[in-house]
Amino acid sequence: MNMWDSFVIGIAPDHLPALLAAAALPVMIWVARWSGLLGSAATVGPVDRWAAALLGISAVVHLALPFRHADNTLLVAGFLVSGVGYAWLAFRALRGRSYRLVAATLVVATLVAYLVVVFGGEPPDQVGSATAIDELAVLALCLVPARRVGRPRRFARFVGSGAAVLVTVLVGAAIWVSSFRAHQAAGGHRHDATSRVQAGIVTSWLATTPPTRAERRAAAELAARTVAATASYADLRVALAAGFRPSQVTTGYDVHLTNKANAGYILDPTHPQALVYAITGGRATLLGALFQMPNAGQPGPTPGGPITRWHAHNICLSALPPGFGVVSPFGGCPPLSVDTTTPEMMHIWVAGNPGGPFAQGLGTAWVRHYHASHGVPVPASWPGT
Image (spheres, rainbow, N blue to C red):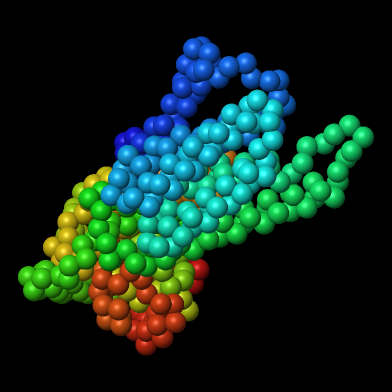
């Protein structure tokens, strides 16, 4: 998988100018100092220098966002006002002037506005989440007073630290919730490029127009072909003989068996990349087939239009056990890990579930009930039996 594609696929196209502006900020600072535009800044402490740098990042990000949001006058005005405000505060912090109260107020207002936007339908991406982290760091520097000789200010620092942690948790939780809400609504909108949804999900958003009669017929035919092609795999022994193998998870209501020999096929019901089973109590029930594209960033075919939705997962590959994990609420990975995106995939369910063959998922309660009456004995050698 191309590392550049893996990086870019996690960023909304509208936010690329903001990312480039943030990356260019060090160069802009160097040019400003070399040309004397910054003047003679007063000697300030490390806290104020960090605050100035973080405020500068937020400034250039917000000033660059209007380039791809020119069709929304209200958003453009908000970006420009906040960008100018952050730039002004960055200069004040760099010159040792007071900035904390105004900066904290602006950060809170910006974060609230950001949450309103993401809950209004725009899914958070890496640039938006990273900017939120930057602003939360500014807020922490503003809320926690610096130590002074002879004035430890323990209570004020305790209250400020607690408030900063509380706001960070609340904002992170809100971003995570909005990510899942966007994933549930992914079938109702379309962008030209794959749209990233945080908390580990990447979805291809589809058109607002309903499927045509031809698309409905194509989707039904695809589902029927998948049911017929995978019917023999209801017996787990047949699936194993065909080359399907389990991962580390061998029991539960969402067990995937993959077949590496089928990796090159694209949406071929006779060659699914994986099968999904419920396997508990010494019995297995075939639930569906999983189809996966060969490369990350390569869109899957949609013969059924908005009915045949594809999705991908954003995961963290780590040097530490267990070797992988999910992204944080802000779209980042833990230390010693790399953020990567899987190729697109699509489930086609063959179990006759209430949501139909192209549902985004199966309810555990329904699977448990279905499994109780459809389970087939697993081989005696199956792990966990």
